[in-house]
Length: 75
Figure 1 (cartoon, rainbow, N blue to C red):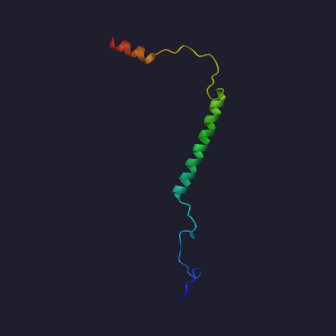
Figure 2: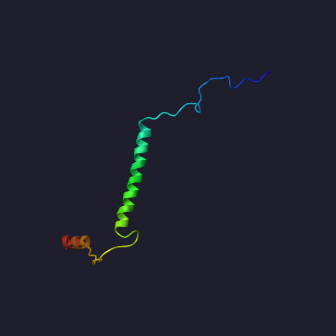
Figure 3: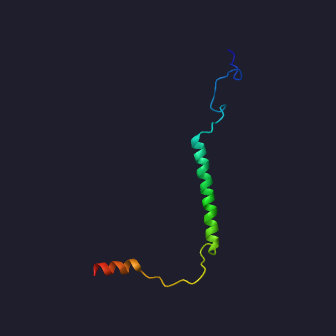
């Protein structure tokens, strides 16, 4: 018995179909671009203040306004 010729078969396959651009693909691209721009703007904002882990200017004493406010209510 002879083997069938696979090249003569013209059944549509998943590999032969061109992927279609639909609204979900466009939304995925827009979301990816938004995340990329957000990361770039975050990096620019952090570099404006001296980079990661550094600070510019004077650091004032930190008070605890929430604790003080809570004590004033409950006392």
